Image 1: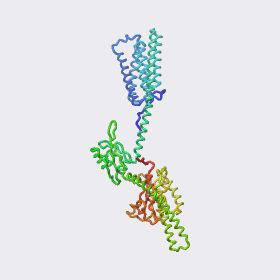
Image 2: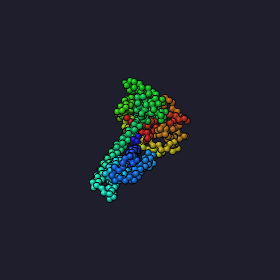
Image 3: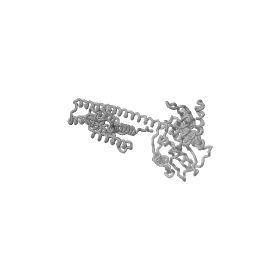
Length: 546
């Protein structure tokens, strides 16, 4: 989630890098209006009070009257524009500074010139230009103010005699304008650099926050962050899908009780007794979930973190470790069996070539060869399990891949094209899977469908769909319903009901599926057809295992 950045504007056309937050800029302009209103009001009050204007040297009452009245009227008008934002900020700020230079210069001239001291008010206006507009524009307004002072002084010198020192005072005042403008320019440059640095830091924080959110949301383990009163602050998709499928669809999850009442109960027990930091819960229609509670302390507040892990996944990893150890052992045994098996097979072949063998003896040698081949197939399957390499998953579009696979399978299996039919229910099924493993799984399922699926008259259907937020492949044949006691053992190693089978085909397929974060299951369809379903990981829902 990106950080909210305030909207900014660049008021100076010559310094695009200098930017001010919009709300801050309008607030400064309102403060400057209040100052101008007070100053212009004081000039008008001075005009209508009993103050003797003759105290101002060489004063021009008519010009003073016109300038003060105009200054006040223009200030009020600009204040209305400022508070109602009838025009853009940049134009209003520039007009306000420029009008100050004109009116204060006229008032200064009407009050006797530079010696009246009114010109010092331009210092505040020039300093304000550095805040309101900034950049090179502050130097421009300083130049305009200096030019106005010097022009007024030259005009006064031409129309009446003035002290020569007044020019020195005008020059010093102009120098003060440029000094203030230059300082404003330096501060503006530093503000630009600070703004760029702050923007870079803000972008870095935003990127890190998005990266953290992505990692947390794609973890295989569920994570919930909550407060002591069980208010949910954050949770990832895995936590909701692990606890309850109905809660996963809801968008109004505010408390732990909304996700799982059992989890809420165990959390409250842990808050009361911190030693009970582990719990097992059983969500509806889900396997058992292992919960671990821990404190998550921050500088300002203390939160609570709940880590959820599906027990079936834990048992799966444990089973994989056991099978890995067993695979090494069985691979060694298989090598030792293969040598004498080869000798038996070779001796049987030689024996079958003997001319004096009877028909009954030839039948016995055929039995020897048949069983040697069967045992050799079992050994090859065991060695294949022991040599299994990690999956090398790729991004593929399932509809296109299955069509290409089926063409190759029909050619290699030497079966009729009408024996298989592809039925696609969803387009653009992108999955993340090892292509070699997927081919091996489908090879086994399709060969089993040809062998046991009673497919001589009806086609075997490969159905592509998106079920439970996961792309899936269903291999549907016409086999009779499998009894529950046999269906529960279909994926066990060495379990088979066929006299010629090894009992390792479905077991290897299931192992390859789990290696790719996929799931292979069996069920009967609504119209009493045998169906093996392979749920594959979607590209968008790939999880990071921890």
